[in-house]
Image (tube, rainbow, N blue to C red; front, side, top):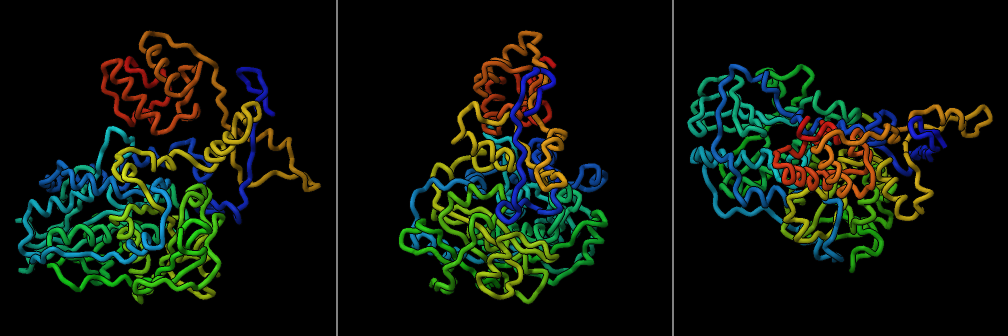
Length: 547
């Protein structure tokens, strides 16, 4: 119990130490506070600044080309918003055949075309798939492929020759503005070329990820390549790996510590599509797949062979994903088998991206991966133990049947994880089974419980730890605008009283409530506040249009 310095009342504060063997954090042992709680909103704020893109100041005095196709088509929006990291599986029970339908899926070509015949408008349309998609129901922009932390730190540079009348050179594709920016000119080689070089922006991802930075950037590259694999057949084109060309990064004017991740050629349509170069193991969760008993199965050529009764368990996924694991019906472990080191993690991302883009109402969410530097997440350690062999790069994701409503939604229900860390998730769980008078005012996840010399928990030391409670002095609104906003907040947050200096998120706000409340403020006060304002101005005093 801690005395609130403003109200004088005693607050019940819960201090929690997570067992890393049962509820590991991302970057366990090297984690920052944002892995324990999302209260700082640091990750969301980074997402809103488009931190993964090149800075506009880096592009001054460079030739900039506004590509055709900036206004998205219904087909593009439908595809992009259907590809989500699903955290809820509302489609009902699932069968073995449902899963096999997805695993057996192949990429089909309606026609084959020559790269030399690629029209400029079609080129712009292809790239627009990789840009941002906005919705009035979302605080954050949406992309058609998965990215670690939704930071989109992997950049695309196109090496172009005789494509769409563009001058030969190296171009950066800007996903926010749908532009090509000429970085470096090159001589005309006399041949048609469209090569994509992938670069990871270290400064964009390092504040969130401390371990396995290269691995997650390579997997994001794989998601982007897998996206190309599913988009290009519409235009009769294909994508193939190029040689590994790390020296190319010197021509792209990026930071010295940025990562060259690999290169791929967009080529004329061909039946010789890229090999998966991966082994796939399906696990059925107990009682969750109607006609398949729990266990780990090798998938090969349309057949499932039981290899173990052991599976990756809930405790083997990171803490913030464990509730999703409970809702899922099955899991998939993909193991890279390529002999080219640079393609190992890229192939893992390719596979998940292709599986996510299925037409069978099955959704997936990534839940663990291996490491090149000895920082394997628990699921990677577990698959190695189950198979009793060294497995190389691995990627684990969970899945289940999803509803048409989920697929068609352009809202943020599936993305609420960006707003919640372990402390917020624990609070949500406690509400379900604790009476109101027993609910802690504050829940704080700490690295380790302080102990006395006798090995008991040191309560005096706990009292000295900072706890983030709502302790501001209650301040009433000072004008009619603040009173109008206060009324909207009280209804949206279901509270009888709110101080104009109280933080929206500390009051229990999330992205879904924020979208509704900002739209209500705009309608009531005839203003045009952007949805994202709730992050920069999270109090009534700051957000009120008169300020």
